[in-house]
Image (tube, rainbow, N blue to C red; front, side, top):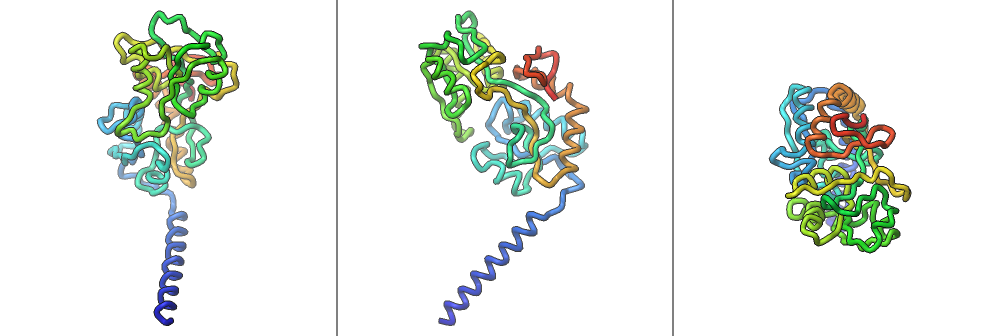
Length: 280
């Protein structure tokens, strides 16, 4: 009986210790000095980031580190469910370079670009739609990533959907690249994909594929998004510094995005030429 009581006391003591520890962790003050720019990133996620530093988010991070005057370091993790919990929330890194505005798990900075889903087709294709309700989609085999906004409108338009998985371990699979390569090979007649992915992979086919941003869509689907950086909640000074950085270096950020063929929209949702810059 005494042994059982001792076990209960130890269990309760451990539980209380965890509560105190968690409370202390949650109340850690915002860091004021930064010995490095510690970025949370996916190491196999082009055109955004990879461990070789070849993505546009890598290049933006380099610009930030230069501006801060500190070294750039990364914590690598597949950007799937639990990414924020296993990186930013553990305080092993301090910023995610690309997060959708309004994403509740982080504190969003100001947006540094805005993009839109796009149709990818071979050059010379008769399919040249800028809205998902276009009757030209009827009967055509169109690649789409599962659970993304274009699926329902495309089905309503009569398209034959070729699906690709959404949540994958990027170390072993690249569904969007597969979707683009299927268009290039003629396995599908087109693909509707998130703009930065569509622009990057389409430009790197031989011959390059045509990218048609869906700027005139009238289906009500959410196809354009503002992209911010993500920091921990409760770090207002860090957020303010990044907002100031975005404001001061926006033209350089825009030039990086143009290098990766990202379709950019202005603040009114209108398509910009790549030389005109992005939405701040």
